Length: 273
Image (cartoon, rainbow, N blue to C red):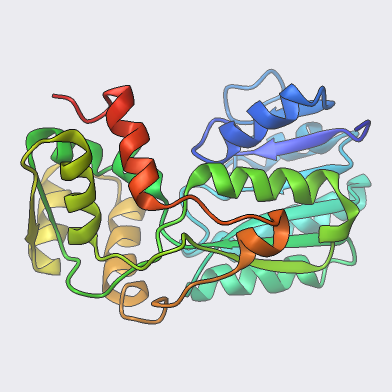
């Protein structure tokens, strides 16, 4: 693979895995992050031209989430610059059931460039690499998630699909709905982790207003507090309670099951206090 590839969010949950896989392939690679040698910062558009110079393919992961207000404007500006800079292929990380995300998808589809959409459900890794890790370590997860199930997807599957889309022509023009193979509630997922670790981990349903107040007390940035409220209030309303076949279509295999993710995490000791 000789094309120069820019991986935005290259230190994040999916981006770091994409970087790892492309590096193993010997790709001509550029990591898009604020701390990179050639920095890229979504909030500082002056950094964009240098980061895109000479790039032919790009993985777009918007921080903190493509559902955030303003994301579509930023993605639109980036896509315009990508076209002007000679970028040929875009792979967009998107979210299921998120109106802003779907609007950003349409921008990429209408770009005139080669494109692939990787539309994902909630990540397994939110339980060990993000905001749910500390509650699990403490033995109690309290959040505004009731009985609506979610088809949690593994970040390794996302990265495998993204790398395939970046390096193989047969994925151009495809929209992949990535999910795991089962529907689980958040309580189910916590129970799976408890079983894998042999620990008692309680799940408590917390009203959204109480949860939002707790986030505010912890000093969470406003955009992240808004995002969590939006996801629990609107996206986790049943609209995504079905399984996608994106992993199967893109890779020709089944997606990773949450139970396997839980066993792997337990073996690594990530949930050991």
